[in-house]
Length: 135
Image (cartoon, rainbow, N blue to C red; front, side, top):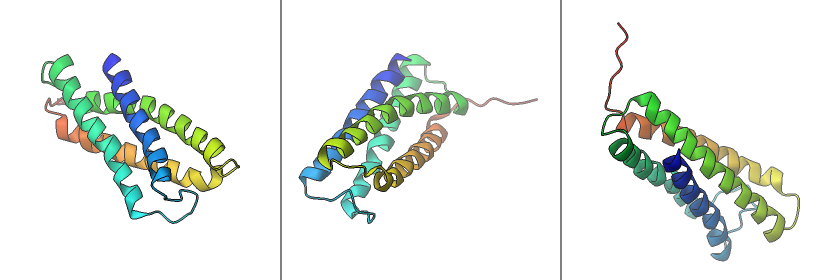
């Protein structure tokens, strides 16, 4: 649980900072059109999960991990990271745009959820090396 909490906090902080970096760079996140620069944010959960799940497999499980163990750990990490990211998004909406723009921003949050689930599945498939046969 400690690995999931620490990794989730790191992913959440980087995701939250990315919102403010994009704002400082001059990108308007209030529009429905997504800028190409915004697609770089997909790398934050993917790289974070790759590092965290490999560390979990090698240091906590002795190098052996099933797909389900990796998937559960990935979801734990993403839950902690998602909580921080959504908190940062709410702060961003309330203080940067000072309005009720949650409807415009909720599409991006759903996209982040989809990226997280797909990342968790991919990373779990990548690092699972223990097979569980059903006989």
